[in-house]
Length: 87
Image 1 (cartoon, rainbow, N blue to C red):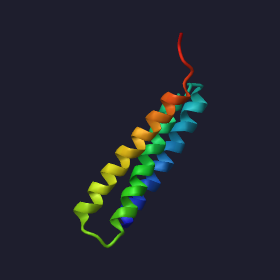
Image 2: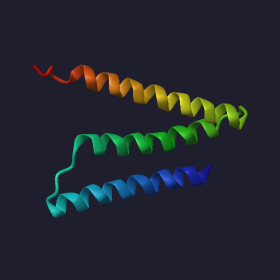
Image 3: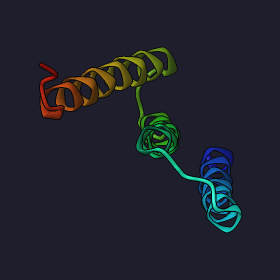
Image 4: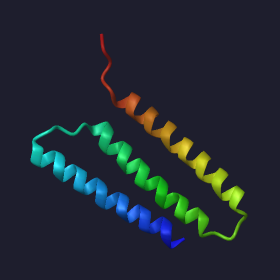
């Protein structure tokens, strides 16, 4: 269990370092890259949360997969709804 939190911590630190590196180099950072990185780190923490529960591991993994799918679909729906129509 501790290894998952360690990986998540290193992922967060790596992401922050990458953002700082891009800012120093003067390169732009797109919003979808930030949201993708946040989704990856959130997925790691979600996996760690479900693996700490007292239910069989297969059920935990299936729940994580379906929760991830639901969050991705929700984010895509909200992003599409907020975009101005192109006429």
